[in-house]
Each structure stands twice: as C-alpha cells, then as structure tokens.
Image 1 (cartoon, helix red, strand yellow):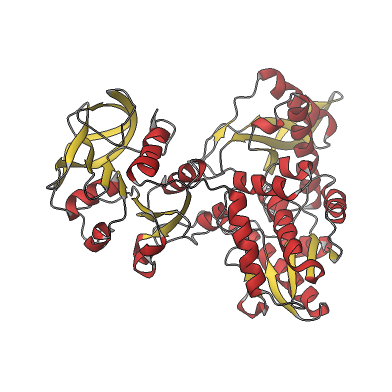
Image 2 (tube, one colour):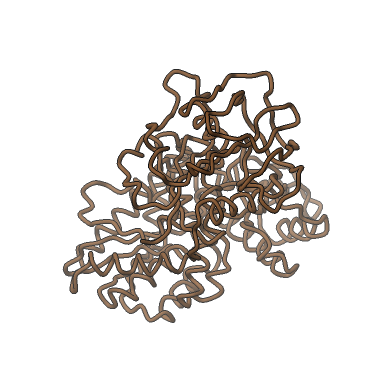
Length: 511
C-alpha cells in the first residue's frame, strides 16, 4: 500500500497548505472534510493530520471527530484547532483565554521532542488562536511554550499523537517545513518519495480500467496547461478515441487560438474539433454584468457546445476536463466548511442531461504539480510556462458588460504586460500578469485634444498555487514602460493603474 497522509479539514484557511507541504516533502496527501471522515477507510492511510479551523472547540456544534479516530494507531498531528481538539477529546483542559496570540510569536522548546528534533531551543512560529490548552491530556508531555506561557506543543510518542498550537505549514513559521518533516519521517516513519508524476501513472491505470476500447472521450481544451495536459494524458491512454473540442469563444488571449491548434497538432492529437463560437458567446453575454452570471452563462454555453459535438462523435461516452484542485476549492466542492469563492465553469456547472460521464485526471493536483506532469509528458514549454488563464477567458477581466471594444483593449493591454515582463526576464518569476478593463473612464489629452478614455488596471501577482497570492513589487521603470506602451498603443486608454491588494482579501482575477 502506498504511503498517504489524510488531512481532516475543520475549515481552516491554511488546510491546503498542509497538503502542499506534505507533497513537497515527498508524501502524497489528501484532504477530507471532517463531516465525511466516517466515509473514509482509515486503513488506507499512513498518518493523520487534524487541521486548524475558525471555531472554538467549546462551541455548541463545533466540528469534531470520533474519539476512536485517535485510537486507531495511526500517527496523528494536530495543528491549532486540531491541537485543541486532541486535548479536549483525550482529557486535557481547553478554555477561551486572554492569552490570545496572533502573528509571529517566539516559542521555547522545554523538553525532549520528536517534532523539534535538530532545532534550536527558541523558534519563531505563526500563531492564530483564541482557545488555549491549559492542561495536557494524561500521558502527554509539554514540549514547547509560547511567550505568554501557553502550551505551544505537546506529544505522546507512545500513542503516536503530536500537536502544535501554531501553524507549521505557513512560511512565517521559520522551521515549519522541518517540523512537518520530523512528523512525517520520524514520528510516522514514512519512507516513500512521491512525485506528481506518480499520481499520473495511477490516473492512467484508472482510465484504462474505466474506458473500454471504442468508447469515445470528448475533452474540452481552453488553451491553458491544465486542459492541454489533460488531453495529452487521455491521448496516451485511449489514442484516437480521444476527440478534443477547442472552442473559440472570442475571449482568448492575443494569438492564442493559432498557438493552441499548432500545439495540439504537434502532440499528435488528430481528432480536433475546432468550433468558432465567437458571435454566439458575445451575444449571450450581452447585457450581463454580474460576475457569477457571466461564469454561468459561459459554462452553460460550453456545455451546449460539448453536447452538440458529442452528437457528431460515434459512441461518445465521456467528457474530460482540466479541473485542478484550486478550482474545486474555490467552487466549494471540497467540503462543508469551504465557502464558494466563485463558480468555475468546469466545476459543478455541467447540466445533468449532458449524457457523458466525467473524467478529471488533474482534479487532485495543484498548478505547480501540473507543470511537473506536463514537462514529464512532453507538453511544449511555451504552454508549460504560460501563466494561468481562467476558463471563462477575458470575460472575467472585463468588469461590467462584455463588449468587443473592451475585449480588444483587455487583449492588447494584457499582451503588453506579458511582453514587458518577458523583456525584463521576470515572466517566470510571477504567477499571473494581465490587464483589467472596467466601466470607469478618465479624461486625458492626446495630440492636444481632450479624450475621455478607459482606465486599465494592471495586475501582477506572485503565488505558489493560486490559493493565496501577493502583489508583485514591480520596479517603477517596469511600470512606467507598461503604462506608456498601453496608453500609446491601445486606442481609447488614457489611464493605467496598478493593483496592490493581496489574496486574501482580493481574489487574483477581478470577477
């Protein structure tokens, strides 16, 4: 049995960082909502992590797990809320306290510890809690305390249960990765080294068992790395039974249609159904200003196009999509404690009468893991390097009604942003870079004449996986070049602004 870590999600904002850190350390991890834990066979896992969460363990109806979960013999690590829950379930004392700690905090290691093995006596960690463990459960030893005297970590090596009040998964905890590694390798004794490519081999075997020879698979390709990699995985398994559908909805980046068609040809995919639906999508989006409604309109039209193409493909049985893990998270598809941030056209938006079974090979991978897989499979480097692009395309970068004029401004301005980053050698250093066009206008002067032009907002962010992001500290010189080029080369633009909000509170895309 392959070594796997199961992370129980209590609604904490960092739960998916825990999963990422485990994977980065070479241990495959999965996240399950606490309410669905009873549906999971714990015998399939090698270790358990109880995540943080926004509730108090003392609240009525607070998230919890059955005490038997802590008696299975699986090594367990509790983080923040998980730390408090372990204390409560196993006989310790937890209370709301004036010892609330937020942000960077120094803790002191006060005893022999597996988690802190090889680390110094004082550690800077990231705290965020209101409850505090005042007394550890019987059999536990306190291994670290905070500046305010709170129990920062405790262990019961005999039962394989460990917990910390802070968040080792965030970068602000200076030795957080080492602490997680100590749990995985020393406490849990895990030895395997997993990589995303390993998961793809498993996915291919699953597809072989499900798709019988002669059954056609329809795969929607948008031009991004996720959908192209999905198509290539399916092509490796089912060959010419794969039918790729590439819809030009008029919402693509500059030159993207030609580039994608050439890439698909180079990958040896022969059955490519190119659908020019530009007028159809623009007509459907006419008068639509609400961001969620835009996404739903686009999702519905995509589904209609897929159905229409499917009718022309003999024995069409499956629909493959490039859904990745962050798509499912933001669409609220991963658990009862997860809020819907925004609907993704390829997550839960397909009509029930589609008549095709869904295949999502990348649904459990993060974007950077998809890049690893893509390179291993031979996806062209230009596509591998290309910044993430939303399924609904430029429609989510146009605030308000989508019009051809606004799309042209957005497309041309975004191309300039990317070109200048490439020229500065910074393209691969950022997560996404693009332009946003809204309804607001700014009076300008061009050629000694007054012009009431559009405002373009430039957005450049850094991120590891798109779940959180920070704005890129671009130089004044770079911003100046971008601004001058956009106002000079893109008709109808008189003002360029730079977005400097992180995620959270702002999402990366405006809509």
